[in-house]
Length: 93
Image (cartoon, rainbow, N blue to C red):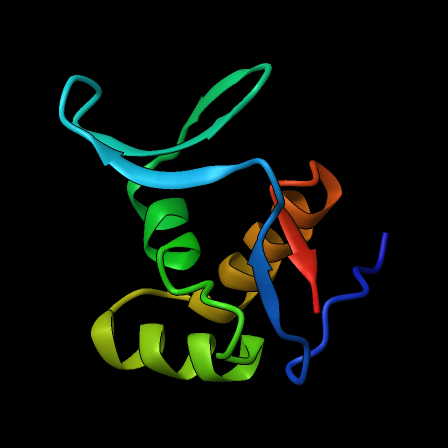
């Protein structure tokens, strides 16, 4: 299945959702009225850069620089955007 995420897309955290570091979980989480999603380290690194201004391409470039030894990081990042958008954690602007 091909994703619809483009490098020029800009996303923001979905309305009624909050992204934050949770000490008790020792991870980033997304809080929303129905509950909470605990994000693994890589997912947290992607979502913490979702600010309503940076394009997907900007975030990919930043993460490639931050984690130069990560193999196939771009596919992982695009996959995370695709999943987060599909679950309505983020919204396309």
